[in-house]
Structures are given as structure tokens and as C-alpha cells.
Image (cartoon, rainbow, N blue to C red; front, side, top):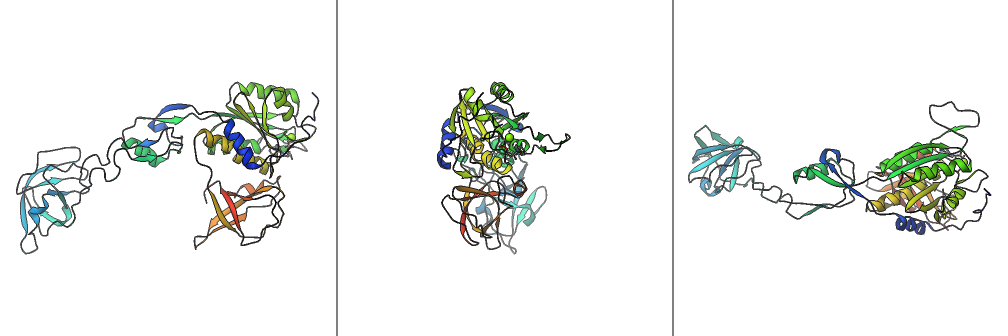
Length: 411
Ligand code: AMP
Ligand code: MG
């Protein structure tokens, strides 16, 4: 196969590239999983309260259920004594409160009809028959029906990753099963004759394949299902065959390396041979300008640069957009932060700088580039929790300038 058909590439603006990925992303499929398997999955329906919480007026304490008016005159000097009508544990209900009586009640029990207050056990004197109160009711001490959540309330949006708190809410409403998005199957390939797998012996001139493992982890963090396809040698037939095969079992394929204009960069030719429609093959950004995304019958092929940092940014931006679109999730949070050091490089194109955002003691967001800023650099990824997005056509930035930061991990 002749190479070189894509030597000339026209860069596309980032926003346009992102929106092309968004438009090409298909519809997600939904499956039902058991509640205890739902943690970490993405909710496929809004979570609406199907009943009030609490579902009935209940006692927040162990104590005595009374009619507040009966204790109005109670004081240290003239205590009021009532007969204990019965004892009510949580989960049980009993007859209405009789005049001149109190019902011994436990935390979580339904307030008996006729009672309108609970007096805590700690402030009364009681035996099995009688209970004495030395002060009037100050606080009704009732957890009222619906005070936590009212029926019909919108609690969690579709697209939210289920966490232990959401599991608690789902259980509160009695859901045994929950609808979640099916995770797309995303196959990841590394490409390059120079690559050896961690654990293998590395020959002279070889490097360890770090990108594939990074991408697998990024996809998992985004809520996808990443399948590792291995390292592809720098030949056209092997690359084409592997991608063709993977298309049978994948919703999307991510490759790293081999997408540029070098003599052994075969992915552009593979896209052509597969009849893929290329959404873009150059983006006006640094790093990762050669990033390519193509579409084969609704399956997206993400061709990321082999440079580790470019690959990281490409996965975050484009595979991230794919996942978030699929799951109906909001974009990453973008904050303005103060640059903690000078960043003197000019930016002919939009630039994403791997960075670390911290919140200082006054609540100000401050950002530092997290290491050397060259696209082949891997060391800056370790402490990266944000990408500074410097707009194209700008000169360098000074310490103290406010810059846009895309937050990608915990601060
Ligand atoms: P390429 O995009 O294939 O031209 O590769 C660009 C640079 O990234 C080269 O220095 C490659 O050796 C390096 N590279 C490619 N793939 C990987 C990988 N999986 N892990 C680490 N570095 C890589
Ligand atoms: Mg290569």
C-alpha cells in the first residue's frame, strides 16, 4: 500500500473536533443490575422518590410518646405522672394513645395515633407502670413523614455514577434492581516495533509500552470497559487485520501511535482501507495535533499520538467526550485558577498543560504545571489533576495570571 495520502492535514479547532465526536457517538444501551452490583455503574434513569421519607411520622429517640398538652403544667416542683400504656419497638404498631397515658417508644417506631410528641428517656423517671415528667414538651421530637424526601422529588440525575450514598437511596426506595448504562467495549491497542511489555525483556532501542496501560486506566476511570488488544507491529497488514477483527467485538477502538506522517505510521492507511469516514485527522492543539478520529459504521476509532502526554490529553478529550456523551453526563468542570509560576512559552495553538490545582488556605485555586511541558514527557502525568487550557494565539503567561483549568481528578 502506498503511503502518504494524508500528508497534508488541515487542523480543526478543538471545539469543532469535540462536537464531531459528540455527534458521531451512538446511543447507549441499558441493562438492569442487582442493587449490590450497581456501585460504580452509571445510572440510566433519573432517581425519583417513590414514597415519602420517612414514610410515616416516627420517633427519632427512645422515649415516651405523649400528647404535649398533657405535660403543659409539668415542672420540677409539680411533676406530671402518666400511666405507661404499652411498649412499642421499631417495626411494630399499637392502638391509639389513651387519655392520661404515655407509650414507651423506641427509635424508629411509628408515632401512635393520638400522640404528638416524644420525650427522651434520659429526662424522665419511669418504671414499668408509670412515667414522671418534670417539664413541658419543648421540642416535639418527631421525624415527620416526608421531611427528608417528599414523594416525587428528583434525587439523582441519569448519568450519575452510582456511589455508596446513591446505593443507600436506591435501597431506601426498595429498588432491588437498577437500570444502568451498558459499558461500551473499548479495545485498546499500542502500536510500534519499539515497544516491549512491562515484565518482558527490553532489547536495545526498545521502550516499555506505557500508553496502553494508561489508556486502559483512563477508560475505566471514565466508566468504560477497556479490553487490551496488545501491541501491533509497524506493518500495514497486521494493523489492518487487528483492527478489523476488533471491530467485531468493540464499540470503539483506541490506538496509540502510528497515526502521524512517519514512514511506519499505518493507521491513516488502515482507516482508508476500512472505508472509515475520518472525522478529523489534525486538531489545532498541543500536544496531540495528529489525533485522528474515524467512524466505521457507528464504531469510533480513536487514533491517538504515541507521545505519552499527547496520548493522555487525547484520551481525556476525545474518548472522554465519547463516554460522557454516551452516558449523558456533564462536561468536566472548568475553573479559573491563578498561575503559580511563569509559563513563558507562546501558544500558536490551543495548549493543554498537565497541571496540578490546589486550593490555598484562603480558598483560592492556584495551578502549577505538573512537570516539563513537552509532548513526549511522561513524568508530568503522575501529579496531574487538571489540564490548563491556554487559548491559541496567545503569548506566554505570567505568574498570577488567571487561566482556565479543566479538572480531571481529585484536587
Ligand atoms: P508515534 O506516534 O508512533 O510516532 O510515536 C511517538 C512517540 O511515542 C515515539 O517516541 C514512540 O516511541 C512513543 N510511543 C509510542 N507508543 C508508545 C507507548 N505505547 N508507550 C510509550 N511510548 C510510546
Ligand atoms: Mg510508532
